[in-house]
Structure formats: structure tokens, C-alpha cells
Image (tube, rainbow, N blue to C red):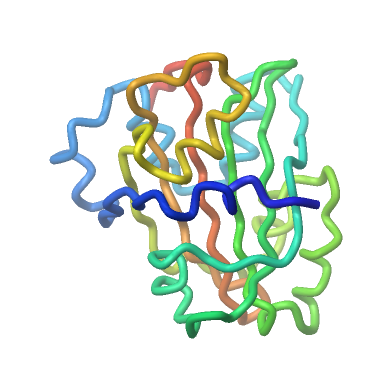
Length: 192
């Protein structure tokens, strides 16, 4: 499969900040609860859309991490990762664009199953394992000048001025992986 983000790699990245600084970023109140949710985003979306949930795989294959993704994962330049881009849908409407990076060195042992998820949500696998650890969460405001914005909004006739996202570094089966979750305009407000 072709990776969507490859066409926009020359664009800059957003400024990712630790989630502890969320209150200083001017995040719309409707998004704060989504960004702060400490559990499985998949579970939260399924609950919010009364179970009418699906995962649509946009692309999956070997690729290179963006510079800031590489830094978070501790990857050397040129190292490959399995890059999986999906949309989480409520009914026919995409609510979340997710980009997961799993370094090639992380796809060993129990973590090999992550390469064969197909339409299965990653969150269902990560949060089913009691040994999965969330190592850090960052948030960012994405605009049309950012590569991830274009990947997330590719299905929209006209993109919004800005969208919000978070990224989480996980340890699964003792191996690192990075999950970017970008909240699309149709996601409803969520109360804390």
C-alpha cells in the first residue's frame, strides 16, 4: 500500500507539547476531554457512537518516520518503521485519523501480531494487554502547513482552519511504538 504522508514530507511539522501544558494552548473545550482521555480512544469512540464503529485502513507499509516521530522513538535516520494510517468511523463519518509507527526492531516476539491487524483497531490489542505502558503524551494544533494535517483531511472537500491531535509513546511487549491520533471536524464534543 502507498503511504499518503510521503507526498507531503517537505511540509513542516506541528509543535508538539507535553499534555501537561494543554491548558495553555487554547484548545477548544469540545476537544479537551478527547485529548486528555487516559484510556483507549477506540473504546471511547465506540461508546460515543453507540457501537456503530469501524476502522478503515488508509495505508500500511514500510516507511520513514517524520523527524519528530523519529526523535520520540529514538530511531536513527533512515531506519524503517511499519507505518499504519487508519480512520476511525462512527457510521460512515470519520472521526479520527490515526498514524501508528512501529519500528522494525519492535516487531519481534508478541509484538509481531501488530503487523497483521487489518481492520482490527490497534487500541483493542494494546489495552487488552495489562503490560502495555503509556510512556508519554503530547498534543499539537495542526494546520494546512503541516504534513499530518493533509493526511488526516485528505477525504474532506475543504479542510478546517485547524485540527487537534495527540500522540502517545507506548511500550507494548517491551517494545516502543508511537500512535498519532488526529481529531477530525465531525467528532462531537465530549464531556469530561
